[in-house]
Image (tube, rainbow, N blue to C red; front, side, top):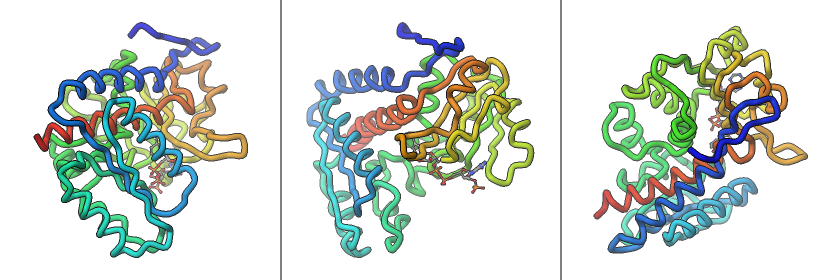
Length: 288
Ligand code: NDP
């Protein structure tokens, strides 16, 4: 790691954009040597603004990695049948390496049923029941992108995890739950507490953390009082305020006490996309 920056308060900045660029460049070098070009297909249903931005970003990074990408869209009025037909077609198309169904899907659709149609070797989001089951068992699998991105960021910037106390706030199957499992894995070896909206004394729980990750979507809910001096603080949450994107962490207050901190934006978001692109390459390899 050669590009260390620090906040005015002295915390190491965990720059996800910089690491994403390195990861995408590494993937591009590998893609150049493959016998065919991996293809990422996204399925976007409806007109959710943030989802459109996220999907555009994923295509941009896929292309920078030398991959092709397909952006399949359906209107918000699409039926379950329409959506299932599309995912099935992508599942059966040998030119498609990875499939991502952008969440959330419109409320009248059954997102779980759509996920279930994605073959495990094209499940670049790592969210299907089979992928998650394999992941929980510690078997080879495509690992969910956001938790993997958090881990890669910590590792790249030199966080020590073995025997450390990690607190993950938020227990969703998308982020918090798989991240807690990942951090506790053999070889990473953190001692993990998984906190949520019913946790009592959240401030005290968080203050025990050497590594504190917040994934709740509660804007600026993690303040200075939550952070043990020197702790590594990772912000996953994204809230869309009037002035743009706001994280779970009150960056200005926390950066002077934390040992390291992610910016928002520019921290975990780019890492999620980088891991998606790595997973697409891994999916291509599984299919060849
Ligand atoms: P969910 O709404 O599915 O889960 C939120 C979790 O936070 C729940 O477990 C909930 O607890 C917990 N929670 C909510 N309020 C509080 C509180 N006041 N104190 C403690 N815990 C609380 O969200 P997701 O996991 O899907 O996403 C979380 C955030 O991460 C969102 O802002 C999302 O936009 C963002 N995100 C960011 C990504 C990135 O790349 N940076 C990628 C994916 C998501 P309970 O279970 O008790 O309800």
